[in-house]
Length: 93
View 1: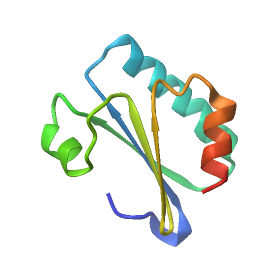
View 2: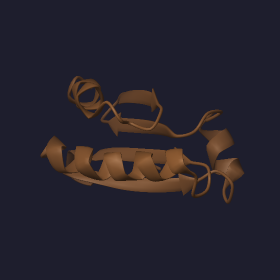
View 3: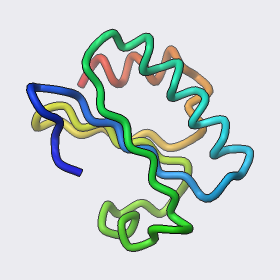
View 4: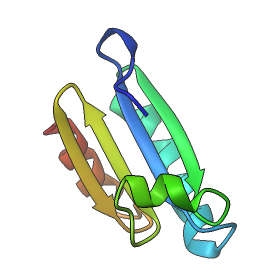
């Protein structure tokens, strides 16, 4: 995915099917996006259905979140349960 329009942050969440960790990551990301308070485009990629897309991004562990904000990219691995830590990483990028 390319950076969002008009300076919009892009978040790409890579999950493996409908596992418990995948569901948790999606739920946590929904809350995180609301708390970001900035224009954000979110894409969820199921690596089981789209393995080539994950490999192209060098995603070898799930769940993984890639944040693209201008030229800065941040990779966060895990179910995003520590929302405050995730928000700090995203706000710092």
